Length: 424
Image (cartoon, rainbow, N blue to C red; front, side):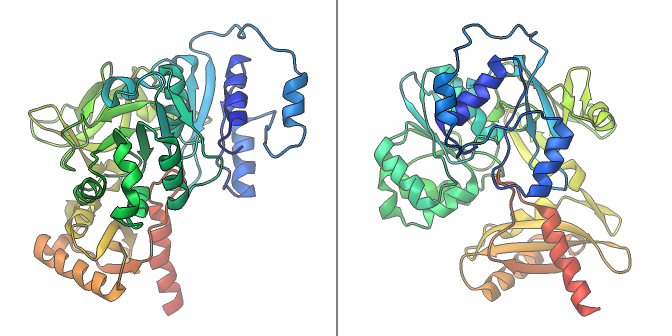
């Protein structure tokens, strides 16, 4: 279903009736749809575009009382965005619904009666909370865009509907900036801007502030917690940190062995969250590995400063041993993204023809690809020791992403592998 009032009625109605709602990306392939249908065991599919939809609603008798279910009974599943392969079904209970909108109320300051607009689609946890359930829980108004919006559509919505809070992803903020500062004047009436789904660069924060006068706050969350976990407090957004945990969210930074990290060191972030999922559907081994005694291992690396701010350092499962030393691909991305000719970058691990682990760096550029490649090479030489420098640097028009905005690194890896195939 598209993001419509009918979507809201179907999703909320399923949960109200004691069924389990599973919202799907409208752009998935038939094979992906069949995989999720089989994996979830869904017995009913609800789609829009049917002429009889509103007629059926009009004929149906209202169900005055909710179905009798327990707080721990499943209410909805979220499917992960599939950055590395097959998506995972993430099981949430009715308890997970209770914290919806916490960040909007306690940090962003969304008030009853105000309007909220989210560019991401409602099948994605970020939008489901901040574009539908959070505003409903807060008494705010959710502005729905049925189809996948482009920059022009979003600009028109903001000019016409005047939302108080605007939620998007860094990639979409870049698309809006490409319209030019003069055309972004309607955004000056928005009180709060939020970005999630990927790292929020300092340069993008500065560019948005210069164009609109607004501050973009970073929000960190995941499908496993459904609701936000860490948010940048207003007035502190600089790109140097991700933010501070919300009230009720417990955090620990641990070593790979599960021990607390030393002060000032980075470690894997473990969370206890009021909306934590029950586990992964049909994946008992992975559930056992990441869900432990009420805690969840995010597999994201964070550091924490003396003020209590957390800074995202990349993924623990992306650490690569190069020449006997560990390298975090995010270091290479940060080394080049401050360059004027490069809008964003992604680094992936590739096993070369001799079986050695190497790094490939992909840069997206708004201008001349040759200039971007030269700038990336120079930045790597100046900022990185030799063993951390990439074996390959490639320019792309844009990075491949999931519908939720996360970089699909396996597709970048495949680009290098196809190069080898063409040469062999």
